[in-house]
Image 1 (cartoon, rainbow, N blue to C red):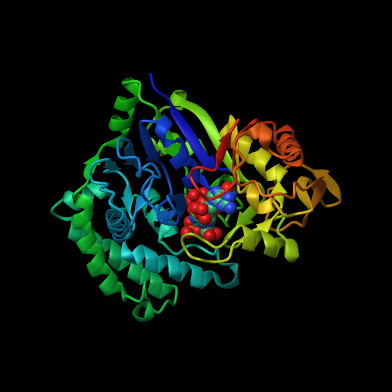
Image 2: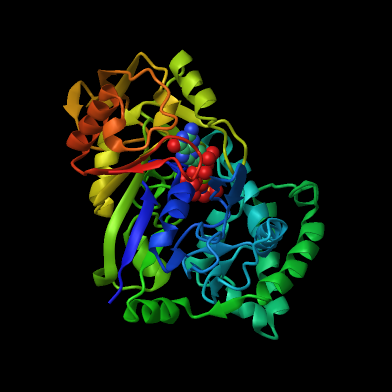
Length: 430
Ligand code: GDP
Ligand code: IMO
Ligand code: MG
């Protein structure tokens, strides 16, 4: 019986999940996305070319592997069609090895408008959403009024669509949103809608399936499945810094509901963390830096959003947050990415505890958003050298080896591999 291994982000997203999935794909038969949608931006680099995937699993460049978009994912057909087009230009024909759950919910153009209306209504309390319609589409799913991929094959789809759109437009107006002025990629709602309907034809060309049966069949045949997370644990709807979160379960538990696999089928859980920390959008970030070090992390790490291009907020690695994420996910293997970004620092800081209300704490408090959290740092000597060409773990500079040992001792999970450049070939396994 095969297992579902899980790979997910332990921070606020953008940990380098796409890259690691691509590197691990040869070991698996199936790669499956279980939550999130086009708010994700997963970057892969090989042969000098960079690809950014939003909805399509990061195993897609391996022709012989199956890729599944699970029921827990949200699909915007327009963005999906654009991604397919992009792949075609790179000679990747995804129609052969991409399977899509009929139960995955659709993001309607008016969901995107409602996302913008909600953010505008929140004013200074806005989440900093990617504005891809994630919150409103998951809201409709939970309210039992959403439309699913399988519905596009039904004769009354347009009718159901119009009803949904009407409600979204009414709600946007109630929120004092100027519907006529709303634009997506310079298109009015109606122009975008036309493109969206055209894109349904692209979607129909794919294998639309009951992915829970498909995946369990694969497992019964002894195949290995890798579940690819989007966002990160600190953006989880339940355990993240609510309300500054996304609207899905980004933790391991989300794999079971987002793919239809039983908890007993879960195998290893690989947690990805950067060697430092970033966040894009609003919300608490205890180790955020506003100084030169923060700017250096942003420039050296090229910390600008893969989906929105926004500059990412940067700071030192946060151990209490990582321990929390490992606890929630049952992480068995740690992957530390973007180590090279720290190459030139004289010293590297690690937040090992917080001080909250004058007391030392290692926990994420309920009042995460409102209470003052002072990070308690320990300093470690930098390794001060280029890591290019390093071929194995034991050839890493001593200071880096001891930094990694510190991380695994503090977090309590062994480091399985590290990444030292954006390229596929620069992952060192232990
Ligand atoms: P994801 O959303 O978790 O897949 O991560 P993103 O793709 O949004 O952001 C990670 C960024 O870091 C991308 O631009 C990657 O190309 C880049 N990256 C990944 N691993 C490394 C690494 O080890 N070193 C450096 N310098 N960049 C990396
Ligand atoms: P990947 O998969 C980083 C953030 C947004 C915002 C909040 C809610 O590339 O790691 P949403 O659009 O979901 O309503 O936004 O979550 N966010 C991400 N940040 N990486 C992501 O995905 C993200 N997806 C959403 O910036 O703060
Ligand atoms: Mg990303």
